[in-house]
Length: 377
Ligand code: PLP
Image (cartoon, rainbow, N blue to C red; front, side, top):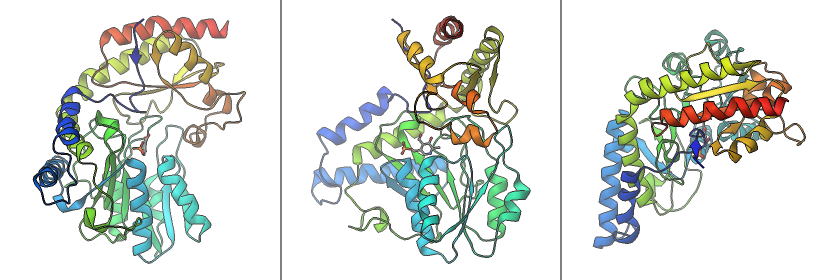
């Protein structure tokens, strides 16, 4: 049976060139990069090269990159590190943020921080005037994601950065879903901190980075050695870091393919499902969206059950919410967009990549409407 992987916002397969880049640093140059001998210094040099290459690709300086273990860690380091280093206890956040941002902020609010949670409209968009008016003299951090993991909605971060920047308030951007799908240029996007994760752009799991603009106050949150300027102590994941730099280079070289071929496949997929499945719609259809993401509601369907049935025919996707019978709540993103509980439960997320083929889409289009019809029957 064919496997059609349409869950690339959850994670992506490691590309062969990326896997190959890791091998040497796991089996040959395996020394601790802090060791002076050749097996350590070889890794340290590879890490310096990886840092330089990623800095160039992102438009920042080498010293502004801190390697971490994942997107969640990068978000947590920025939130706790900046909040610890600046005055003020007020934080402004978009309601649609990933739990990697929302959960640390919720804990901080229990410890005395004040949160302003910005609402979104039915398409998932923020109102920039509301954002501007929410800023206070004691606002210590603004955090808005570049693209949403569930719906693919893209937020106008350059404008948000200028609103926060005009008040001198640090801005954290969770760009975990964006790299490789839309351009990221830190010379024009004036974020103070930006989180990335390798496994979302065909790198390995367990490695990410935090861009921290020079001069942004940030204290270490894990204490230990002096790795990553003391901001992220712990022996570095050399193989993972080298692989992430390779994956980043390939992802950026595939940007055009995302904007053209992947977008066209996603649009064909959506249009065909809308035509073949009555009572269906796309979430956030009127907002700017990532070219690979399709969040679709099939009314009356139990998403998690559909997920299992699609898996049985080899199609891998994600459900928009936990099942009706489970204790799970609907997705906070869909709820914020005003989607009803039933529609949230009937929502599926399909996410493509440059490895997705027209044949994959044909196969998915052959099976999804049939499975939905069977379930509704
Ligand atoms: N932020 C966003 C927008 C995400 O989509 C994810 C993962 O799905 C994360 C953060 C967390 O990344 P990681 O899995 O690398 O911890």
